[in-house]
Length: 258
Image (cartoon, rainbow, N blue to C red; front, side):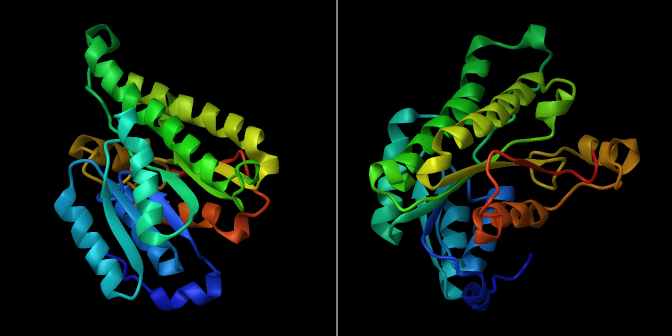
């Protein structure tokens, strides 16, 4: 695990609070650590992983950073406003959002999918991300009295490749996120809010099965391996940073060439 380097924050000029949905585990956890290392205050959102979220917040604070673990289910629209209110109350004004929370859904052929399963998938991956972005825009946009900021949506190369067998609905949700990113970026571009996406390929998290890892090591990924959460986090950090000040409506693919 990469160490958190709080001393790097002075060079980056990072400040403000970033909400990371689904921040307790996997890619979200790596993103939280990278943001804390760059000097941001991090609101670590979680739905079920309370122990992991609390441990991560303690680790960041012990290294000299600022973090708070905040429970909210992104699949429940009623809980999303409270997440942002709690983040600002605990850590200060919002500077950005990382829409990372997502689920794979049921790994089934399309003719075996159920309405309930699809509704749960869409609630988290699409509706939740859109509503969270809306809460961020209300706080960041100069139209609402904000000072600007950035939103990064976590997409997937599955949006362009159609997804692995049994994960076609998941790929469709990520296609929606790609379209949403471009549309929202144009909508708020003159209000000081940049909106971009990162599209990971196969990444070493608990969502990736041994079968997927073997696929990557074979002919599935040109680089012959799965990515690491830290590699995805580095791309997110760039898009949130002043170094990407003229980047909006983009989707940065981090997939080992897949």
